[in-house]
Length: 283
Image (cartoon, rainbow, N blue to C red):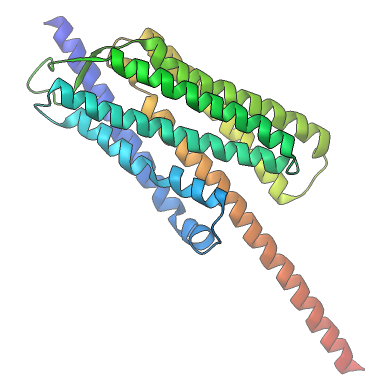
């Protein structure tokens, strides 16, 4: 009985975390939707724009799937496995796209050096491939049991190889660390005296992104390796949501600064024309 009570408590905690994840997404959409319409919807199509929309809206697929996985009643083990797989693959896709945005940001900071793009793209692609293989192994090892009580809805993940589940997040943390070390090096080497707002935004946002994700990733990996099921996967989707929110904000912030700088330049040109015209009139 005590074991069933504990398991029920764990399932409720996980379900509440899913509600938190959806709340974060909806709240972020409400805060940044206007900026997105202004700077992304009307801009020309580019790789960064494609990555933006992929990471921005892909959580609308896998996060609700995981919510259904957690709150639906009378789901068979096979159905639970399918829902979990769909959500997990969506998480891998979303985080891969978010990491791709970081690679583009690093490429921009390097001054568009081709060697930097090749190096970090290779690391990114290797990490994505390894994560796909590891996730496939984890999903094969996952087993599901009946809920501890009819009053507790959702699927009950009873077992799964935590190493396979945790390693993809370790890979992401490694990738982010390599990117951050390079960012710090190139910042000290090339931009320590720069006052360019775009450079400062890329540098500041990247450091903030890394520090926050490093902290959450460390907690997530520790939870995956130490906590019992289903608590072991408590922060998986939260980390996926944070990747989506922060990577899209990096792009939106850059576009916003570009827009303001363009307006400032235009206003300067117009002012010069007006002053010039005024001077001609005075003559």
